[in-house]
Image (tube, rainbow, N blue to C red; front, side, top):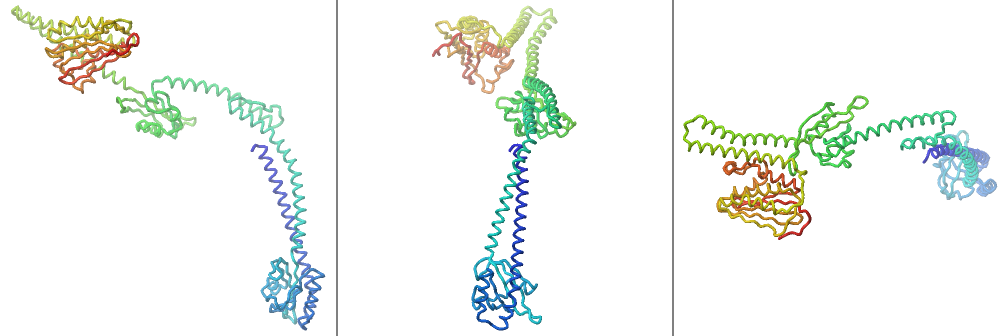
Length: 593
């Protein structure tokens, strides 16, 4: 219901309520006057009946009933004469001998106590509603009996109904006549208010003030002009807030740190994409919900709650166990201050430093491993040279053995530096290596030719299974040679004399499959996940004896990733190993069995 409806409803309620109250009061007053009039009439008729009642009590008259009946017909009033003990002497409408004792009738009891009795009740004798009036009869100061008169109220009710209809009809017409002016008045009063309401709603929707009655006189015009000025100020502030909000949203969205903002009730008001990933939550579902419902990370909830409670920044580092790895997150919770200086919320910043910590660990391990690996040949070289220098008279044969040992360590140091340079190139080329179409058979065949003599020196049965037709791949020739060379070199080194090595190249779906298998020492399952790490050796002493640097498989993995492929291994201790490298083909090809 609008303002006009409410104002008019109030006016209508007041008018109808007033009219109804007046009608009810008039109706009550008329009813009271009618009853008073009838009461006086009954009292007068009872007084007129008193002489006849005296005479009938002193001398019983057989014609008394007929005289009372005649008077009843003339006046329409029921007449009854009652002795002091309540027995009925005569009645104008009933046989007195058959009537009950009237001592306890209300009007009789009241007349005995107060000198006059009046009663409105239903008569059991005549079976209708009556008004009774009773006067006491005294003889020598003693109560001798009562005279009672009664009128049926149906005639009174008829008069009351007629008067009531007239009263209520007049009241209704008066109310209806007043409602129309009230409606017009309410409309005149609420019209400007409705206009102002529509303008305020338009301002609230951001559409600006419309149809304001700026020229209206008095307070309405002043209010309209105030609304216009307020609208202009609001538009300016809204543009400023919108610009700042967009800038803030863009900043939050572009941050790599997770940002979670909460209000004083710990309900989430903002969650950026980085925080979604860290907390594994949805921003749309999290907004408006308590933080402890959004994430199960107790440390985050506790830090936010402490920042709200203490009003001071909180810093911590937490670890989150995931399905694949454990994540490390630097957490900082900062309270937000409202306009009154009180804490109105908090911002939680989540910085995922897992990769940074991993890189720090890798760098530390790499430096330690490189230092250790370089230290061994350098120390051996130094010891050999110092031994030769300290013994000028050393026999030539012995000196030659020392020099050959120094040469071995120099070659080992050269291989280590070469592999380090190759690894650095492979790591820097990931995703950036220049890939061109080429026949994969050529670099693989060149690698076989280069290492065949080494394999034959250990009496290995080296077999090659290359496709008869060109196998075009998107790759770099040098990268393929390094991949095949490292895999084949490992197979030769870690396969005992007389073993067998097989190199297979074939198409496998949309990839070229390079497979190097042997029946060598094999790899334990616990080591198979780590053999592609830098400097990791399954058997460190054995690796050094064979001249390995521990970088070959790491180079293979990085080069395979740089070519858009992957590397995998299957191995069992004592049964050999199978290394597989998949490189994308230049064009899709059906699998070759």
